[in-house]
Length: 247
Image (cartoon, rainbow, N blue to C red; front, side):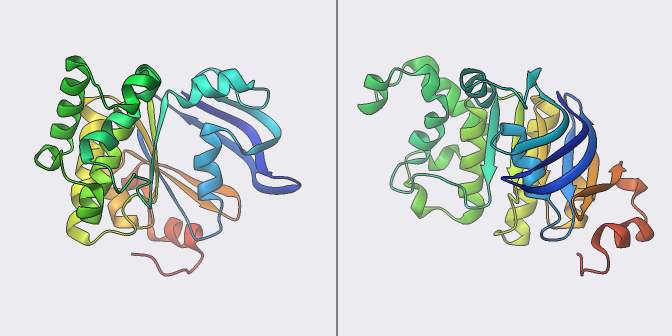
């Protein structure tokens, strides 16, 4: 689904990631770990475009990311859901309205403005809210919810577009331990039961080891580890973080 070969990425004239070789396959739950400034966010967000390709081969869902046209970039992004650390919800709207906003590419603007939704659309939204255990709050405004609840709304919204890939940028860094575990369990469920490929930047190493099927370690713009969670040794962890405190 994602292919990077001898890939160098960055912004303007600055090269952030160098000589990256990475293949991510359908159904994987991949965590990107590493110290601050290592290039984790650049690697993650390059998957939806907007990051300059200096050199190498880069494909996402069979789109050539170096030469992608604007029309194809829109088509690509329609197949990728994104979950942010800050949730990116419309706080004044209800849970239901936020979730259904993930379907706006399939709902005519006139109906969306007056909030006229068809039965099949409401059924789909209800199913998604059930998956993330948020249905009982469907008519609550999002600014009345806790951080963990809001992140679950964000997951349901991402799923509303029927994505092939979900990108999660530090999805639990602002949450308490209990809420973080619930969010990760839901992402694990989405990955296993809906077969959605997930790529996440995670700060907590123990969480990455527990929930993800594969871990990518990044340091100083290079991939220094790519393997299963149980292959991470203390020596490899030190190489990834170079002495930085990790949890």
